[in-house]
Image 1: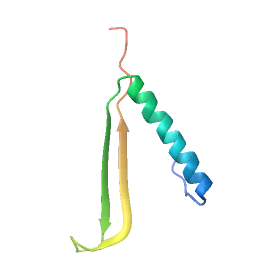
Image 2: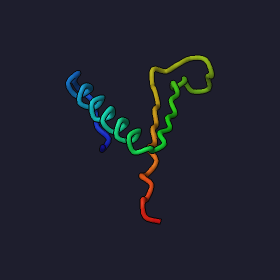
Image 3: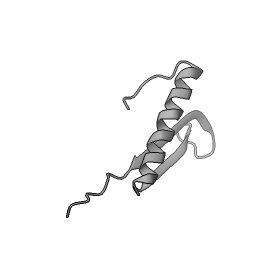
Image 4: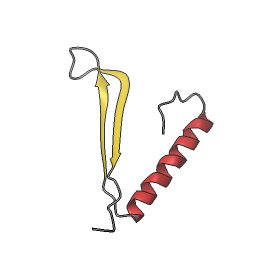
Length: 67
């Protein structure tokens, strides 16, 4: 999925549906899913959020069935 600007609620719905399909497929395939999320903080601050949010998700590659 390429990077994109989300401009409408319909785009959010499409994104969430695509994400759900990928997560469900990964679980059915026995793939490992890992996520990391953090709230952005104002420069030089550990307590003041700046309104940004960073989210990374990795789905492990499918395991080869022929070894």
